[in-house]
Each structure stands twice: as C-alpha cells, then as structure tokens.
Length: 181
Image (cartoon, rainbow, N blue to C red; front, side):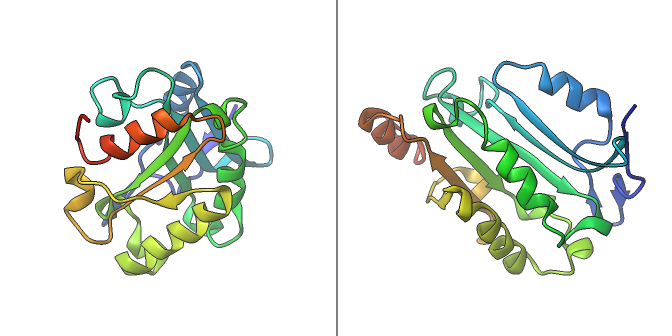
C-alpha cells in the first residue's frame, strides 16, 4: 500500500496539488490518463506526475476530444529534488502510447510553485521548467490565456505530436489566442 512522503502537504507558502492516493487512482482510471509515481521501497511516494485530457469547459478542449492532453502536475518531495526524479517522471508521462496523436501541453502558474522549497525566484523556476520540458520536445508558445498572461513568469509549453495534421496545427495556433478563423 503506497503512501505519500510526509513532506507533501501544506507549507507556509505552498500547498501540494495532490496528497491523497485515492485522487491519483481516480485520475488513472480516466481514458488516456497517465499517472506516474516515483517510489522508494516500493510503497513510499516521493514524486508523481499526471497527464490527463483537459476538462470540457477549458479552452484547450475546444480542438475536440482526445486532441489536447495536459501535464497537469509534476511534483517531487523536497528532499528528492535535483536528483533527476522530475526528469524521469516527464519521460514516463510522454511515453504515452498515443503521444504522437496529441498535443501535450503544460501551463506554469507562478503562484502554484514551491519557490521557498526550490530556493528560487519565479523567473529561475520558470527557466528550470523550460530546461525540464525542452528535451522531450516541448517548446514555449505565446497565448493570450488570461491566467498565463497575469504574470510574465507564467508559461505555456506544448509538444505537438508527429501525427498532428497541418489543419489541427493551424487550429491550435488560433486557439492559443481564442480566435476562430
């Protein structure tokens, strides 16, 4: 039976996104979802990642069902950061069997980052995220999505699968700015 490391949870300026194993189990049951756990001793969760389709009411779902998939969360226990755990989690997340048929994306909102635990300012954390995702084919894309535009350090990155048609690529370009061509 897996359990979360005690360092997950609430810190003075940071709250973990997921702290219940049952929540991750429920997500893992969703179609096309991919939940990756980093374990020690086969039962102690020190990190996790969540890849799941966007909610139907989100902008990114407008391309149609099954086209966009979000890296919703990547979190590594404070004691295990800077050890390569996050890189391994991203690698396993994008090892999804349909990854080339989808546009995988991540949004980085600075107000959700554990800046105190990472000992970084927001711009440094942003740079760290770029370095984490770029080796897996992600690149930064501009968007006018309001939450991303709230702060200059916020970021939107995506990886466009090799099987994505030119038409869907064009639709994605317009969707990033909330425009219907």
